[in-house]
Image 1 (cartoon, helix red, strand yellow):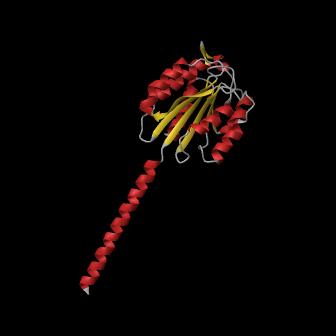
Image 2 (cartoon, one colour):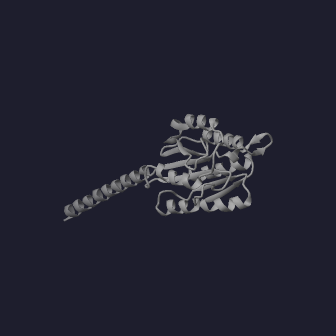
Image 3 (tube, helix red, strand yellow):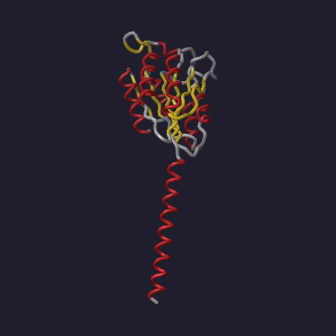
Length: 219
């Protein structure tokens, strides 16, 4: 009888150990499977030529801040970043290009820095179209897909960026986007703040602080 109880207790203990191991493996697989993808959507429209501070244009300041951010961004397992730019090639409303596809930070850092340094403001502000395209850039809905939009103006191509953002969120394609409005009027800010979590920046310091705050939340 005692031998029977001992055997049952041993079997129960082994069963509990196996279940614990299986649960642990399952949790590990789930945690490893979820990756974070951050796509920066950068405004290179013609208005970025306007003065921002001292002798620097909005583009000069935005590029400096973006370069600092990418240079100092920590390379972490499960984190990939990409860069989409609009308004840098021509004045067409489809001028929105994924200039750097997603990749680990260290793998794409150099190319993103080179691209940002070379940008020149030329075109319009197709925010809605850019968001639509950004939604297609992410490899899977199963990951943490995050858009960080940096703009100095409202939509100029007739699109509805707020509606596009709502659709992307409702379909589970992206988390609520982050939007940094740089050197924008209150009226223009009101038209882009509905896209996502909004940050207002008026100069280099506040632009850097806004992007730094976003990175601390998502990375």
